[in-house]
Image 1 (cartoon, one colour):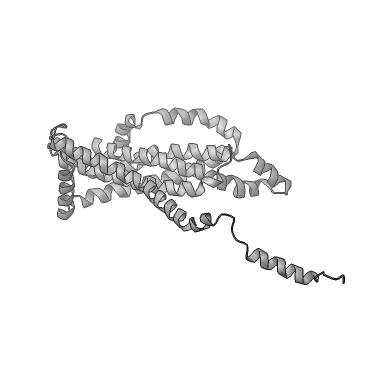
Image 2: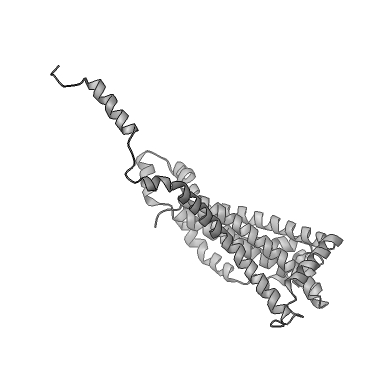
Length: 293
């Protein structure tokens, strides 16, 4: 060994020790990491709170405008009166049967529409021939206002729960179907080519590429269907029913009990907002599966 040289193993140990003891070039950056993490957490919390803040500002403006007669308090009573009336209806038990009736019909109709929309949309998106054959018909039916069919549905199925479930189903099925069809049809061609290059069969590509890739579209369709279903079930109950939140709101309006009229509307709005936020969270989790545009 030449004089003044060190063994290779000794050199490696010295190098590893130096790497382990390296001092950051920017010490301030390391020290500020916890503060930055805390700042990001606060910023994320503030961003999520903006929606709640907007609702509170709207309700406060409603309360002030009604109290100061900017809005006619007969037609728009202060929101605190609506809350008080709602508490009264819940405590007395007068609203429970109506709410259970509406929410049960909504849940059955919406779940059935989601299942049917997915099952019908998958083959329409996978087979272009089926899509081209049925797409004009579906577009025409989707554009037809369901309120025009409500008298016929009531005559066929009566004023009970079945007619309300059918209205909810018809309102929700088409957005889910169309979005499912779009999601299947827009499967990333690069993923299909790569799967085929590895010897994947059509059924494997369908189950492991197209179906997962269409999930964000399906959830997006459910969000649209949710709003339509809530609107039409209330309309159906107001038009012809003896039970439900829509019926309760209609009866209160006929008796000029405006605060009581708003209670079912607020319940429906809260339900819609809560379910929409839930679907948004699911959609964000699935968004990474959408094909790049």
